[in-house]
Image 1: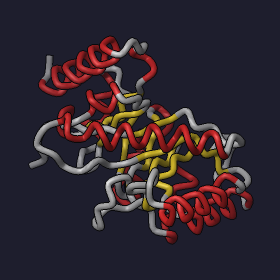
Image 2: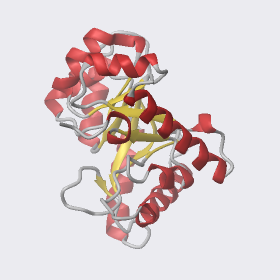
Image 3: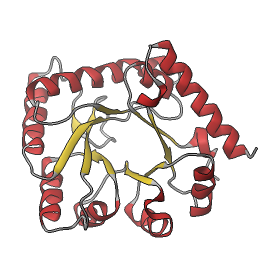
Image 4: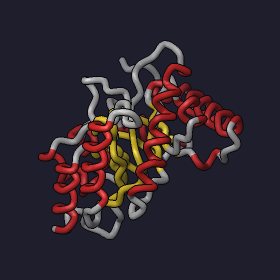
Length: 242
């Protein structure tokens, strides 16, 4: 068994154990292998071991990989998207985890209306929120959303615009927790995202809020315990980048 296969199997075991701890079925969690900086050959090796969901951060880097591998894999855009790259994202990706403004959502909606998808695939989107309030992170600001009225009003206004757009299928939320020394320190951020998802589902029932994309290599088991439906794992699968 290769090193990649062993690491992938270890992550799957950890996912299964985290699900069992909180009484969830393992299949309720989608493992996204973060394949930025990985070659098409490495991605194809992971596919031979049953990994079919891959996350890319940069549109330019993903273009060649998707052209080569195509629909044999499921492609998730997990990085920040500039408006000028929206056309490629609409055409190529199965899921977008990083919708961070109503303005970008409107751009997606226009491209979709003009046939930018090229087929009948739904355009599945998660709204990225900055739950920690860190200034270096993308996402609609959601820090202290339960107690800060101004933050909540702006956030709700953005979401109201997003869920009202045709063809943009909102399915949940994504966040990136702060880098912490112990996984347990990330738990409050994941719990806050879950509570935010529940509050938005109550106020905007026209969208489908079943997805929570949260948790990476250092904290994904805690994220699963707090309700993650998608975990984005790079280093724990592919090893340290050289």
